[in-house]
Image 1 (tube, rainbow, N blue to C red):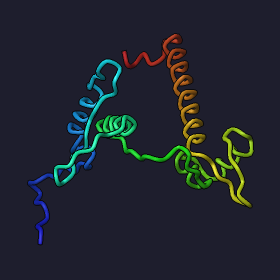
Image 2 (cartoon, rainbow, N blue to C red):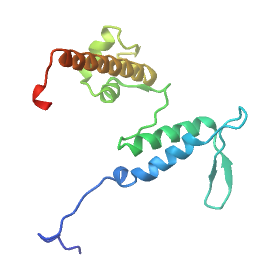
Image 3 (spheres, helix red, strand yellow):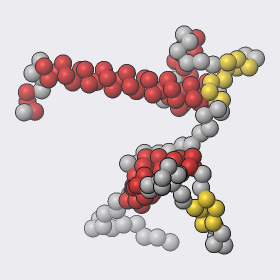
Image 4 (cartoon, one colour):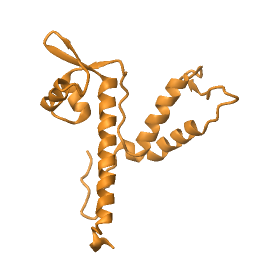
Length: 159
């Protein structure tokens, strides 16, 4: 049975991702810094519990590198096959929008989809492409808004 912390103790709770950020960064740095030799691909191997080793394909190295980089920055990671199809609810969850709003995007043709009977299916690749375009547009608009604010002499209280 554990005892509750006293008023003199303080507990700092960190997520497993935050607690291992340095290790994730080290993995990312190692993978990113590995030079290819004379046009050959980077080589890494996976070592099994019995000491057996198998070489990792370049695509797996790329996935691990990008996942480690994202995890080192405190982001969550989910690996999804791009050819996989999602339901409207799954796609809405991935975009962090309501299902009704997603259906409107589908009706407007802004995201491709197909029908299977009365249901719609959306490819992960199409959802991620829409999300990347939306994020790019948002970032450009924010940069323009910041530029306009600076030109107008806004936020003088911060100077």
